Length: 308
Image 1: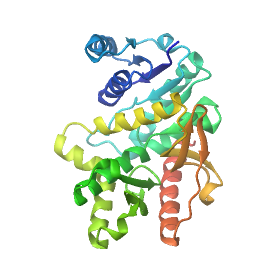
Image 2: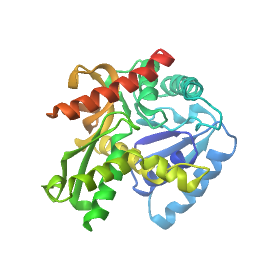
Image 3: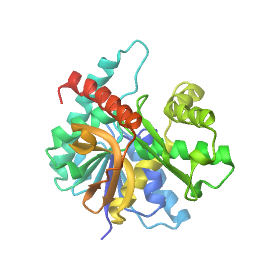
Image 4: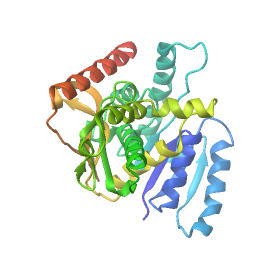
């Protein structure tokens, strides 16, 4: 019997995640959205592509959460983008309400599922989902570092004109301006990038990574990134469904690790069949540690606004 992945939110990120998951033949996919006809139409279109892709998966779309029953994984992308004139707190409260509603409906249908949170502001929304679901922390994971690390890897590969397959990179911390790209732990074929890229140039690449989402928004003007975010969520889905024990930077609920307690923050995580199977603690320099603490403080500020 095939695994089942439900995706809540059939916008660009959700629909593209469905595309990646189906094209990799990872699981049957259910797309859910409040807008009538959108998940049904996108799901049918994707299903009709499967004979061409030679993939035996079923893709369905629905406005009813009953279709998500007994999902192994639920990916939540639902939420609204910030609109002109909207304060950060307004956005936070609106998306908090959406997240709380979605999680309660998802959990009622799939009490044993693993939740992957993609909605922004990521770390606070992961915290909201964790509180609402009542699951253990192993079953509520946020997608952030996989995307941020992919952006960093892209820029490193371009800078050095090498294969992206040779590049590993780690980005910790909250998803946003306070993220902490770790140049010391980033390598090209095992060689630290600090030996290959001049410090001032490396700092420029780190800043471009921090601004990665904003750079795309600036180009698109009326939208935001979706290919890379959905691919990042799919890598997490694959690691869990295939029990790969893959170490990826994800937002996890820390309970004393890295000296942080009670908040979601990006750290190296081992993902397998149980979801978050281990948090890997690495030694940080005082400067990196200060960056991570600053990131955690920014997440706490958001969580305090919505009292989670």
